[in-house]
Amino acid sequence: MWKKFLGKFNKGLGIDLGSCNTLVYQQDRGIVIAESSVVAVNNRTDQILAIGDEARRMLGKTPPHITATKPLEYGIISDFEVTEKMLKYFLNKVRSGKFAFYAMPRVVVGVPLDVTAVEKKAVEDVLVSAGASEVFLVENVMATAIGARIPIQDATGNMMVSLGGGLTEVAVISLDGIVNWKVSRTAGLALDRDIINFAREEFSLVLGEMVAEDIKKKIGSAVNLKDRLEMPMRGRDVLTGLPKEVKVNDIEVREAISRSLELILNTIKATLETTPPELVADIYQKGIYLTGGGAQLKGIDRFISDSIKIPVHVTDDPSTCAVRGMGVLLDDEPLLKDIVVPAA
Image (tube, rainbow, N blue to C red):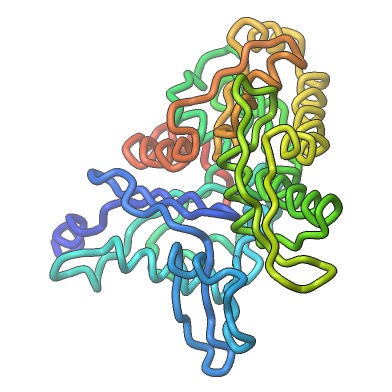
């Protein structure tokens, strides 16, 4: 009876652990947390100073005794202790009410397609340590397809391309399973690094990560735009060490990120080349579905479509597709059992 009573407070959670952002979905409430996967630590005292968006604002601005760190790399845990503290913080934010202390939610969490047994165990352990009663691992692309309301149970091919911060995951899905897949570490963060390298090589300008990301979001594009876009790019002059500002336009940024975009395109082509012809025929008819934060880059759908001559669709609200799919799985036990990744 006590367990049944506490069950009212133990709403299931879906967690999308991303290299850039962590999203949390709670049953009956929807998405309750969407914050940066960044933690600021005081190295002198080992204290956590800030977590999430507040910590992200500290990136590149901290004194030597404070480190603003990203405990997740390429969708996997790189720092167990810091990730545990971050997840505890997020779980405590979600809990509410008189009996919140006793709440031990069951958690559905996404993992990359190329996850190893050791990495799976790390994800399970860190969530149990953070307060989860039960952990179900699902592939991110499967959760994304469910969140996009794609009929994965049908005997037809559906191609998902998830453009995240650390990883680009390409998968062909049919009959509740992944038939073929490929993963590339060229994704959103690689585009940011391209812009940083471009600024250094062309203008002798040292840019911060956040400035590069802002440029990518505001004027970055994969194809020629109808109207010219430009904005100031501010950083430190390599030669003088003094602050410097130059104007940069969408053509220059597009040229800077073009190599990484080609690598993403090649990953999609390589997946199609090894996919059974019956499923390729379905994909040709239905098109490719783009999700993830990188799907918001201007013209990325047209860039892919023009190159491989297949329709490309950007899903609604692509950055939240995965976590919304996990929310669906929390309410659909049979489907969850069908696609859950075996425990490590």
